[in-house]
Image (cartoon, rainbow, N blue to C red; front, top):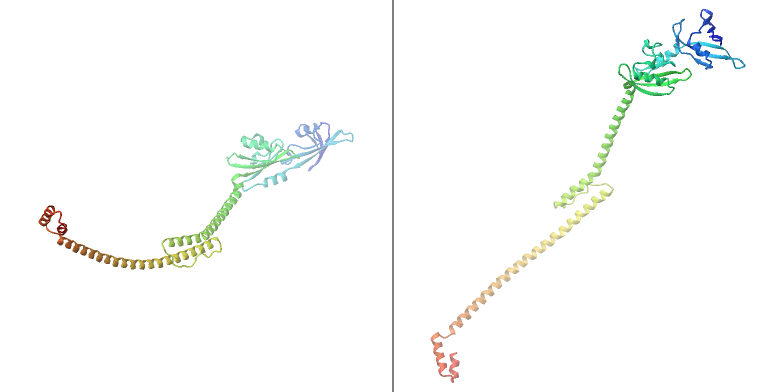
Length: 337
């Protein structure tokens, strides 16, 4: 702890490990900033302590009188080892690391020891790291993808430390960061595939259960189309529309079988009647043939009789002459005829 007048002399008094000491800080940047009077309290830019060789920063507050005039200042040198150790220990994944920079971009925590208190994030040769440094000091909270000096894909999550104006970021390897997500995706994909297979099997089972009665009825229709009307048990026992349709098909088959049986009986009766009719027809044909023969015989006999009763041609000519000569003799003319 140190204190001194607000007079620009740079003189401060305080206790150190070696005892009470007078210190002169007129040329130091933090003292010049204090003398501007623009901040009632602030943190100075971290520096390496000449006494300990460790990184420290000064917490400075101004002392004002009752009249509101600045009359002095109080300074406390704060060792940041504890802070840097905690920041360094915080990392995401095996290859992750954290960054801590002061308000001017100087590295306070960096995985490269050569960069601490020697390099600034805002002056990096890698443009992506330089952009990250500016975002860390922008006062915003966010995330940024970038490639490090080795060309590896990284993701940085940054946030400001508003009390000091510093910037904090934790950097993770992109592949390592998303590895759990990838594993989760694989697990979800596997679960989805299993669920899909189970759903497919369930659908197949339901479809087969629904289609089985239709297949049975289709076979039944093929049998009926092949004139197989034998009585068979109903294989569809479902108590739904398909079951009732199957019962209707059984009734239709039985009805068709009964109709065919009736038609078959009528056909047999008709065949018997047809045979009798054929026999009667044959008998009638025989009788007609006999009658025809008798008629032919009668006709032949009549023709023979007529032929035998006619006079010869000379006799007819002689008779004709006689008729011409004796017209008054009717009796003879009649006989000639």
